[in-house]
Structure formats: C-alpha cells, structure tokens
Image (cartoon, rainbow, N blue to C red):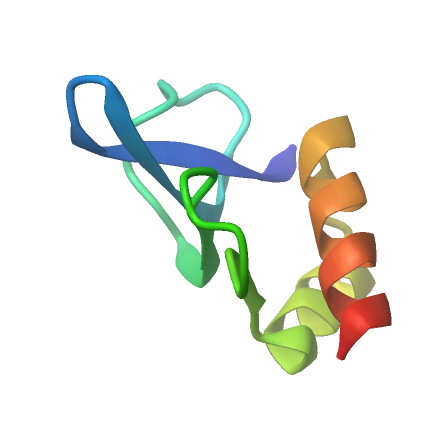
Length: 80
C-alpha cells in the first residue's frame, strides 16, 4: 500500500518535515516515491506548502494519507 506521510528532516530540536509518498512497509526516512511539499512547525506563517495537483493525483492513484497529513493539507488548501 502506498502512503502519503511526513518525513523528518532538519537538525536535532529543530524539525522540518517533507510530505512524501512512499510504500507503507518502508521506514519513516526510507525510500521515497515522490515529494509533495513541506511543513515547518517552527514558523508561524506559511509553514505548510503542498503541491495540490500532485496530492490529488496520488489520491486518485490510491495513496492513503495519514491523519496528520490529511489535516495539514486540508488546512493548507483551505487557506489558499
């Protein structure tokens, strides 16, 4: 199964996440099929960036977003 989830990047105690498409059996920071955007929880403004076209394409292909990613994307696309 293909999942849309967060991949952690950044330095210790300064996280930065990428919204990625990957196989559900892979590790959190394992191989990635596609990168859809990024999320920076440390910033107040513009902390979520998502490519809506790619996101919708992967949903149509059967990818399942995690709960957190679905909430972040909904928040991002409603603000735009």
